[in-house]
Length: 297
Ligand SMILES: NC(=O)c1ccc[n+]([C@@H]2O[C@H](COP(=O)([O-])OP(=O)(O)OC[C@H]3O[C@@H](n4cnc5c(N)ncnc54)[C@H](O)[C@@H]3O)[C@@H](O)[C@H]2O)c1
Image 1: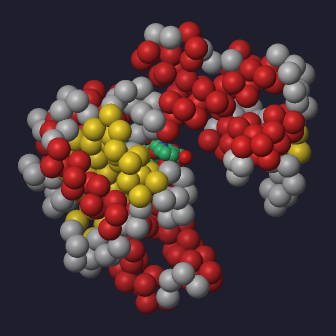
Image 2: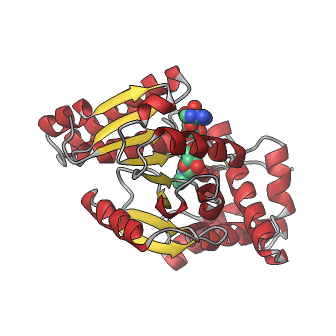
Image 3: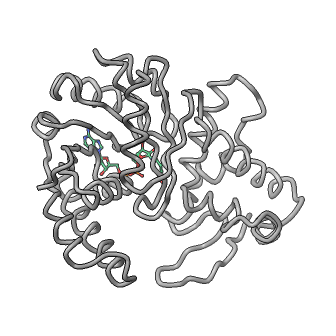
């Protein structure tokens, strides 16, 4: 078992399995928790495959994989999963009512000095902290996808987060080999406050006929050295996720500049959500790496 401390990760989806991976690799004892047993088994298998990919690249050895995998256990019950944790990181589905319910549960079941972090992309840390008896120990720890690859951790101070807790999470992020950036709790934090209006403006440019999908993405890739154009990135994030974060910005600031483009709203209503549904601004066929622009009606 990992000797550096006990971490419980709630939610074994895309982000949860990546977060469990990096903590286990850094020597922490990790309990991965999900209500869905199938998802839990899938997450453990995904972590194993991702370690194999690191071995094939020569970045880690078989021994590192074996000891990291031995650091991970799983549970389908939050109360037992968090009972000995030093740190809980919640990475469950992005739904405010669900997160408030989970934080009430972990506040009751975890040790009183345990730090409670959330990986939320857009929900207020202050609001989540307010349902617990320890708002000073609640913080945002926003990892980027894919977690084992991306260096940034956006650390978000809630209104009541203790300075000492922020310092602890900064040091912990460095221990994971990440680069932490501390920001304050306002809608979209920094990452999405800046990224989502750019994506929305790209969609407006397409909607108004200023340029086509390929032209918009090529200008931003070659002109601004972005690794991916904003429309392709929106497809990867999920157009439903982009829409919901833009609504958080619009509601939170009360400023019409964040209003989601009608084309984005239409595409979400039509179920064209990007990579996960096989079509967004581009079409995605299994096994094909070629970028094909989707037909727009
Ligand atoms: N996907 C990304 O690129 C990304 C990037 C940064 C942050 N985030 C944030 O990370 C969080 C998780 O996102 P994801 O993409 O991994 O979602 P996901 O849908 O892949 O996984 C969510 C998991 O939570 C589980 N879950 C739901 N209710 C639960 C409960 N009560 N207890 C335990 N587990 C429960 C689900 O079974 C599912 O396995 C969200 O808050 C999201 O905003 C996502």
